[in-house]
Length: 304
Ligand code: PSU
Ligand code: MN
Image 1: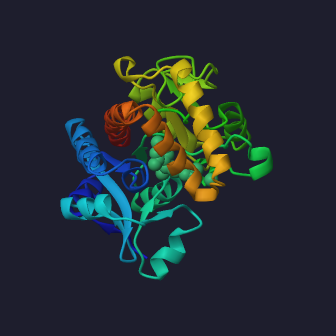
Image 2 (image 1 turned 90 degrees about the vertical axis):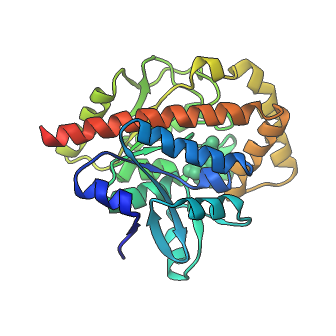
């Protein structure tokens, strides 16, 4: 199985140039049309402005595509009922010639196959609240433990159980690195009230840590938690009651499994009258810029 690289991604990888992987579940399940397409295009542009090549990843007609052209992005953004593919779903979807959007876990798998070391997104999946009963822990966490890709996210969403998410990441040996601050960011909010296990302040240090992990023979990646820019943040205090209501609704409607994250995101979007979406877009752009900087540093490290 060979991934299908877009010409621009292939060129960049052939020459050891900086490439940043981007996921597609955020397009199909994370944001409403047409903001999802606008955001996907703006994120790609932000990566290019940062001097790297964007590689949005999705499964189209059974092929694992790394780098999507505009018609493919548009079709994905408009499609309804696209499958959400995590590690468990990827092979079955591809073998059956299906189409699906890749989550953080599946995007990491694809990035590694293509030789891409950095991936920028919004937020990762984590340990859901009530996981002691539901056992709902995102496969994203295990993926970070085994697939050597540096993932730039704005932390994990406050809809999750953040203390337990940190515990699981620690158990799995995943470095959780806050950028430029001591606190763990919480997606829409700059801080979660929890200390981040690790802190680094520059893309160069993050790139060097990525290389050092490989040199030590450690499997897995790094989670780079980049706080949302201050002017776009929604404070944790504002969000807390909104999240409580969304979680209660999910419970009442018996929402389970893969549907939980999209359901909660949609409820928060409605309850904040769209403000959560604006914040989400701002943080993804911010992560794309940092991802490009890290990819540029990694490509310099290779030359040294
Ligand atoms: N966070 C967002 N938007 C998203 C997701 C996370 O702000 O769309 C997606 C990502 O693709 C992530 C997935 O990998 O949700 C996690 O889903 P689950 O909890 O079912 O593993
Ligand atoms: Mn889940």
